[in-house]
Image 1 (spheres, helix red, strand yellow):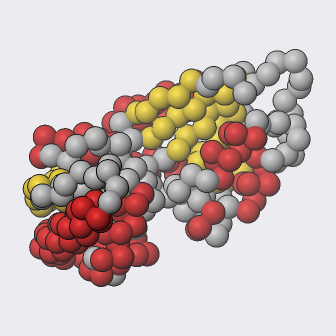
Image 2 (tube, helix red, strand yellow):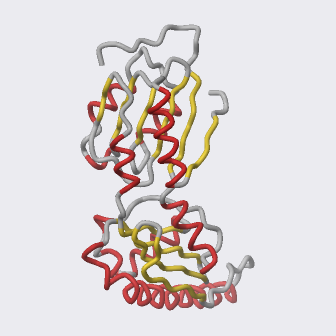
Image 3 (tube, helix red, strand yellow):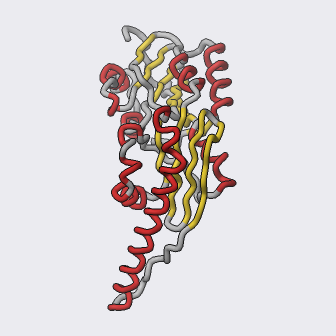
Length: 258
């Protein structure tokens, strides 16, 4: 598959993009595919696999594995695949431009908790929309991995594991301090970090697991958790990723009988 144009738009820019695409009047088909875990994606998934659309397998996998679902907007020349910041709630298949579910999703002032965790640094924040309600950042002493072997390396590894356990205990306590006052109104929890780090943290932090049904499997792509990076984290939290696929013109794309 040829390299596709991909880009990310923040909340306000994305709302303007939706207004523009709606005004142009070039979209002939709208498909909204909720995330598979939502149990509502059946009809739209069938649509994207129809032979006349002939999407590359890599694109279909990208749509079907998106933790927030996807919206597909077809014109005669272009397919826009929109990966929204939060889960789409309903399946849509229409012979016209339909962007209101996306617009409503972006206008809803959700309350989200973000935990950015690296071994030795963390940032925790609760935000309503793009406004931070509470936050805390900090560091901890976790030594880098020991590359040599032998008994000294084993002792070092045990010491490092204790450092990580203590660090996670502190981060979990701070998470409770920051998040618990907003627990009832919390819509989503986002844990950002290396997969193994987040998995181990969740195993140790029972408080975070009380929100297991609200944990959103997304990455915020923040390299270093610091107070100065919280604005970027919130921007990424609300951003929509757009993939543009030029529809091949050597075959007819059928836009009927959805």
